[in-house]
Picture 1 (cartoon, one colour):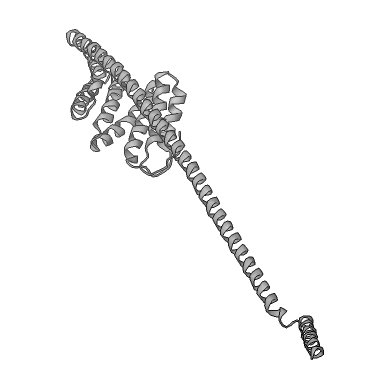
Picture 2 (cartoon, helix red, strand yellow; picture 1 turned 180 degrees about the vertical axis):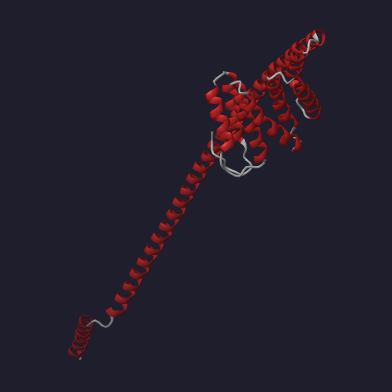
Length: 277
């Protein structure tokens, strides 16, 4: 049984009581008593805790009933039933009342048995336990058999048989409907999971494609930047080469060797002219 997560989570106590009921049906009284007491003494602040405690306490009394300790069973179940009636928990009170009727009948206290049976009839009318009619009819049949009214006893036993058959038929159909519902729910969950996985795969594919596109775009941008930088570098080198050529042209007029050559040529021209004269 899992620990309580929230103050309104009553599932642990309900599970312990259900386990106790299971072992009681299997006539494993010790295990039933263990789980009923676990439910009653469990810790934690839980919504409607007093109601659950009353049910657990009556279940402990049920163990005494199984052990045929009727006085102890009555000590636990009577106050539990009274409290649940005060809290308008008529379904739970009806279940306890049927067990109390068994206790009183086992003690031959037919007056209290009749009173409890009549009370249970009222509780069932006020609650929603129409499915328990078979148990009520059975205890009424036993009561009338004990008081010597065989006609009523047989009538109630027949009614109990019919009610129990209706109960079995109803819950057989309910089990089928619940099984079908579980299948539908599982199919819906499977489809939802399949859709989720497809969506994840689709998103992953898109993310991969986007990554490739972004990478290619970045490579293109980097390539364009490199081309642009290389072009600028070449233009700069060409510009520097042109400036060097211009400087050489300008500087050639100031070269000493050139100046001397021109001077010698001029003297030669002048000398030849003088000799002619």
